[in-house]
Amino acid sequence: MPDRDEESGRYTGEYSTEDFLQAISNEGGMAGTGEIAERVGCAHDTAYKRLQKIEEEGLVLSKKIGNTLIWSENRTK
Figure 1: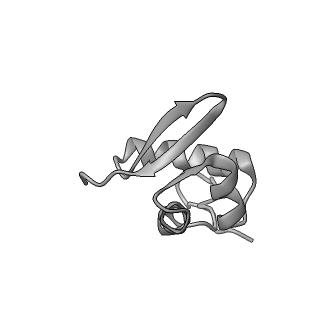
Figure 2: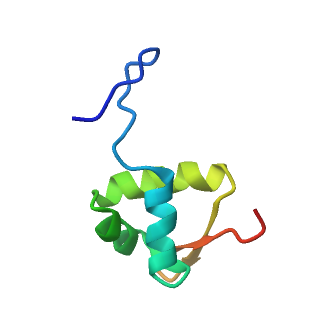
C-alpha cells in the first residue's frame, strides 16, 4: 500500500517521476498517455495526472495530435 504524506494525508504514490520518464524514453522519446500507463503499470487516469504534474515541473512536454495527447521528453531541461 502506498505511503501517506504526514501533513496532507494524501497518498504519495507508488510510481516515481523516473518511472514515467523511463516509459517515455522506452517508447522512443514520445508516447501517448495509454502507452505510458501500460509501461508504468498504472491506470490511465493516474498516468495523466502524474504527467500533468511532471509537465508543470518542466520535465516533459505534451502535444495534442488528433484525439491523442502525446508526451515527450523536454530536452531543454
